[in-house]
Image (cartoon, rainbow, N blue to C red; front, top):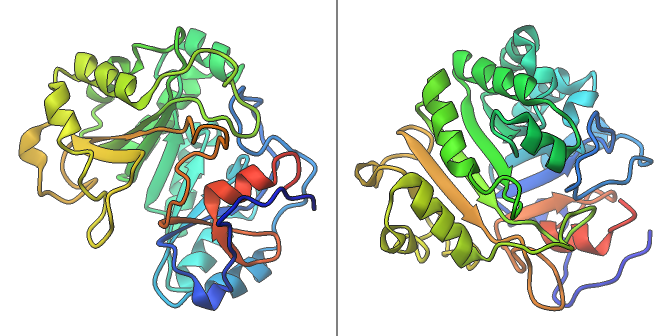
Length: 310
């Protein structure tokens, strides 16, 4: 595997893992062809589940396992995988485009195997035109149904949205309208600009972090000062604030409440990357990635170094 080593890159043996979240690419197969995709290579075999379980069983501390793809629901053994990950003592969340979660029966099956937390990609809210321009598919109906199914089955919900300048600029307000329409009262709505990573739309004008904050202010009715006041706060307890990523609640009275337990929260992340390096959230100490050799490496650095490969 060809790798362009990034300064400061390192790998850890599983028993020495220090990352709180470890992202695991369980498959490179997908049922979409989105214009922004951090692993567009479809020729990589599915990850060996037993070797993965052996690796994460060695983690010294309970870790959040982020099951990701391309599209993890392409694996028929995903429900079994969820059960076995939980048996290792680790937690897990599923990151998905949600097409298969538009079937309530499938959502119930995942829950019956122990899944309680799901991150749903929603780059277009309920707007087919936005999905077509960003994700190359008119899939709003399935996306909204997936979100509805997750809500009805009492999942902890995250939504993920890439804001592309000139296309879905009004999506923050649209997501809030959608949450209200279908009754989503507790959610982490994650917002980010276009990252120069994998296959992306980074060749066009991009939003800066400050511009994302301005968009959020205008569409939520919150002041820029209020949103900015959260930038220097840690995302999780006992962690340091992150330079290009922070959270804030829609309602100030939610401050101090547990994430996902009270109301709507937003997370804004700058995926634009460092000048000249294009590594989003560089030197992030919280997110790791399980490598093909079943070691643990910083997520964004490993992805960037393996573009066109793993």
